[in-house]
Image (cartoon, rainbow, N blue to C red; front, side, top):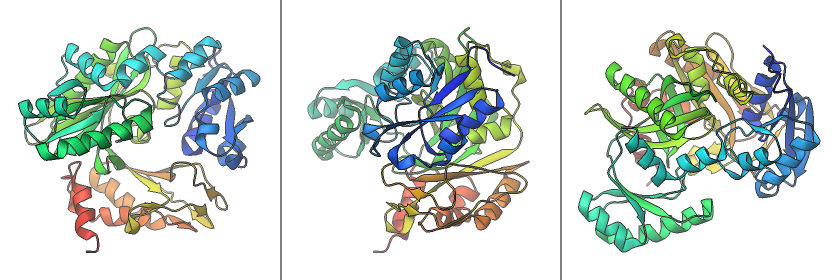
Length: 455
């Protein structure tokens, strides 16, 4: 299938997600334009694209985080659209707004929708209007005293959260009143540094919660579909390490309710393109609460692709071209289990310290039910300027036992020499009951790592 409205797409990212988008463009007969910093001049995504444009020095703020440089490169390359991937400018409204002003299509939601769902307080209000359960929470807390007053109403423990936040930043758990002042100061400072906005709100802490998210797609004609859910509870410092589809700990009724809520919220905010609605789930009570919307393609989108057979990035491009969704809700089927392991250049035995350096040797696993998305090759350098992810190792099985068996094989086959990675940690996690028996909540891995740490 070709898309006459999209002849050339600039990919405003790097690494594995840039490679992923470039390949989707090729499948659709669309030419791709890569961008690169000086550190990435020979990177895989640059090699695979039809054209490549330099956009600045290695620091992201001087290259990949410059909306003006991205739009200038797109116009110079005669691109029709810009795909932001995830991270960098993917959820910054300035990019879709700049694209619109320049006559470029943006492969994602429009700026006003991104602003609405990116504001955590406004998104909570929208969820409430859509009939989606929300955790008891405040409007913006002006100071520590206001936050303490609300916490006194709902009861400690609570969470302080950045209104403009994401990625686990700008969040503090406050267990008791005497912790509030210091926590508020710390969360405010982190939120201001990360997002340029220190506004905070207070939310009741749902203890022993699971993190479950629903993938949605919406076209410009008002159609919204879900592609079921993913389990993302195995986290460290609120950063996901392992993701799985479907979620193994929820009932079919809860699954239906989660998916219906995600679709209702997408309709409420006028969502367009790919997005993810995230929820906290109390498995014991089989209850759930809205958490946030991620207005972009997710790192873990591949596990949804493996269990549904839908190419999410291709659908993003079709939607951006003004096409209707290529399928209806009743066409979406789920088959088997898929699990993703993020292979990061980090040292789990040393506080997950980043491990930049040159990849001396790289052997990627293969065989039935194995998919690896990566943006590196042997001889490449893992740069200190960017996220430490070097690959996403995904496995699929007809059932969860087969998927776990393939995960063991794939992790044993994987070789990355020259930098320390999380491969060994993932191999150990496969023998941990939290993963093997699907009992982990969002704090379980943190507790396990603390217990294993040398005293």
